[in-house]
Length: 327
Image (cartoon, rainbow, N blue to C red; front, side, top):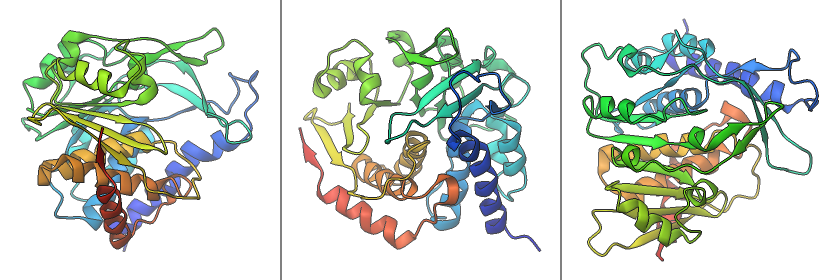
């Protein structure tokens, strides 16, 4: 008899192959049309399976936020096998083109290189099947500009009060060889529809609102976004909140780990776990600490092989929160 935990672990193993095994091969820069190019689900893969992992280890952290994104068949098939997680399936679209891309990891811990050969097809929000369910929260994850229209977020505002958005795809454009480069992006109307915005520091600078974190956050808060999360890799996370009467910005350092193995998907893991915790407790600082703790464990092992210890998560979470400070 296969139990839920076995299915989840099987899912991690399969996605390890999809995400890591092919990309870890030293892919030739001139072989973009080789067999080593593969379909991948992007944010739904990390977000969906980390939600299942959380439900097993932290059943008191509910309700489950819905992921609004394209997904590859491997992800859908895995989630279909997991009992009691059918609501996740309504958020993932298969009848549209999923992005085809691969990652290249240079030697000497160089920054990964993303090659995108087939961008996602345009997204029609009215194709989305809600099945008369009003989700508590929606996490929007983009790969390449598929969620770059205000009408999509207008539609989502009719379905939920809490929209969290990681706009990493909005900052991407494709070079002549399929290489993904970063470019500027800013859409005031779109941003005003959000409750929570998560950016990397590099992406935040590409908004064109300055290079200082406090200037960027203050500018974004003027767009009526409730919560701003700016991640700075192994250094930590900046949190800005519109409801803070003192308008203070909090910095939470990352947990000091010496064995970072693979950071792919860390941003998706962070946003998903942050929303999970915040929906249950309403404490943004502790939600950041919780998410950072899980990410620190996630990056210490390859892919979805991470074996999260509940006690270790809580211990790291407390240390991160204790070291937080105002900037």
